[in-house]
Image (cartoon, rainbow, N blue to C red):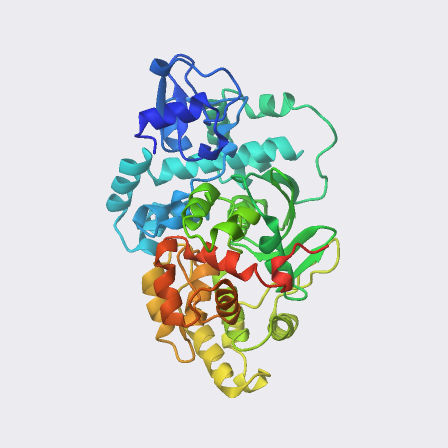
Length: 490
C-alpha cells in the first residue's frame, strides 16, 4: 500500500487507525516516522514519504515518534492472508528465527537461498531480514525498559542483542533516547511487577474485534491443566525456544491485556508473537467483513456482530494432535482425552496462580508411548501414532512457515485424515484464512437454517464468493448456534 501515495495521504490526513501497520509515514523535515493515526498535526504532503515497515524507516535514517509510538502498531495483515515467500519469511522473523538461527537458518526453513530471501524482502519491505529482526529487538528492548525494573545489561541480552554497546546504540538510533532516558521519562503510576519473568503489556488490534467466539472457543475447548478461563482471562502454558511460560489474556475495548510469566526473558518476543497469532490480532476486519457483507445471507450475521476473528493456536503440532483427538467426538470428550494425555505425559510447570500444571506433550514424548496405553478406538489410535511419529522424526513439519496447500495435501495423504481434519488444522493451526469446513456438522446445520446449500459440494460452490476469507465465514456460520464456543465465558 505504501506505493499508493494518494491513498496514504488520505489515511494520514484523516488519522485513520485502520491503516496502522499497513505503512509508516516518514517526515523529511523532522526525520521522524509515525503511524498513520499519529495525533499530531499532519505535516505538509511534500514533506512526507511512505515506507512499508518500521525497519525500512530506520534503514533510511528516521527515528520513531515519541507520541504515536509506531513500533507498537498492529502487524501488517499482509502476512496473515498470504502464503508466498515474503509472508512466510515475515512470520518466521516474528517468531524469532533470525535471532536464534541467523539468516541461514531462515533460508533453510524456507528452502531458498539467503540471497533470494534478501532480494525479495528488500524489494517489498525496503529492509532485509537482519534489519527486520533488529527492529523487532528494539521494540522488545523498549518494552522491557518501560515495563520492568530489570538492569539494562539483562534487558540487552533478553531482547536478543549480542552486546550492551549494540543495545545502547540501537535504542538511541531508533528512539533518539538512551535506554536510561527512555525509562526516566515514564510517568510512574506504580512499580512494575517485581516477580522474576512477570510482565504486563497491551496487545493492540484493528477494530472492531468481537471477543465472543474468539475467547469462547478457546475457553470451551481448553485442555485441563494446560488452559483455563479464570477471572475474565484466558490462561495457558507456552512451550518456548528457551524455556516455558504462562500467558493470561484479557479482552478490553481497545486492546488485549496480556500478562506473561516466562522462565527465560529471551522468549518475550516469541511469546508475544504467538499470543497475537493465536488471537488473530493482525487481521484486517474491514477487508474481511466487507467481502462477506457482499453475500445477502451473511450480511445480517456480520452486521449483528462484526469483527469476528479465527481462534488459532500457539503450537501447530499440539493443535494437530488435538484435532485427531476431536475426530467424531464431542468438545467435552476431546477435552477429556487431551487432558489425560497432558496430565500423564506433559512436562510439569509451576503456576504462581495455580490452575495450570503442564505443557501439552511434545510429539517426541507422544511418539515414545506404547500405543496400547492410549484409551481410544484402534483406528484413531493408529491415526494419532502415525501423526506424532512423522512430527517427531521431521518427515512432517507444521509451522508458521508451512505452505498451506502443500501441507494440506500431505495431511490428506496420512491414514485417518479426511478433509475436516486437514482443513481445521489449516484454519486454526497454520492460519490459512481461506480454509473451509463444508463437512462440519455445525456448518451444515447453519447452512440449512439460513437457506444455504447443505451438501458439501454445493456449499463449497456457494462459498466461492467468500474467498479469500472463508475461514472467517466459518466463524459467522458457527455463531448461529448456541454452543458455548460462541459466547464469552462469564
